[in-house]
Image 1 (cartoon, rainbow, N blue to C red):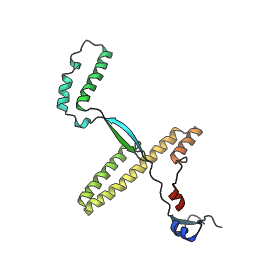
Image 2 (cartoon, helix red, strand yellow):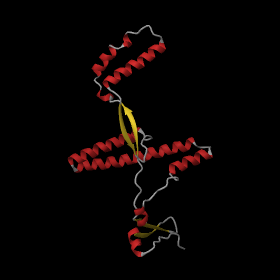
Image 3 (spheres, one colour):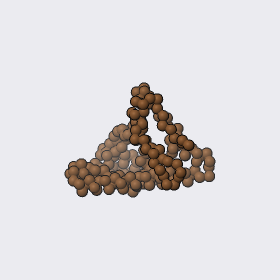
Image 4 (cartoon, rainbow, N blue to C red):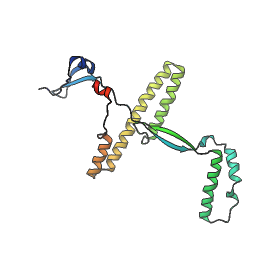
Length: 205
């Protein structure tokens, strides 16, 4: 009984589209595993760009900042009530911040994988991987390469574990509600994501 079929319209397209066909026996089933390599281009990663506002707080001269705070109205207006002093505090701190760390506008790109849900361990593993990658690119030493590859493996495991824990937490929150569970599963599986091919890709397919 045939369970899987790989079909193409002619032999030339078949050679370009399908290659490395292999049939493997698996010990836990009476069926065989059929594998092949498909010459289909991967979809381009989806990235979005958004505008953010920020302050360069790390570049603040703390001595000058402290001096301006001491000379502000915070140490002169002592007869205000709690609400008035809170408003004065917000206004004066913002004024001093605008002098030493003015607001800036920039653009950031967000990739297909959202990293906002990564654990602290996964973030630190990614940072360590980037540091070791830069060091290996600078030195080219075999020892640095081994350290970098080890960091890649550690970061990959930490990221996968963090994402799995986040998915489990979302499903646990929706437990007991069938509709919420279904919506969460649909979003996690990207079942509604439609891949759009251009004319050249359609012709190749």
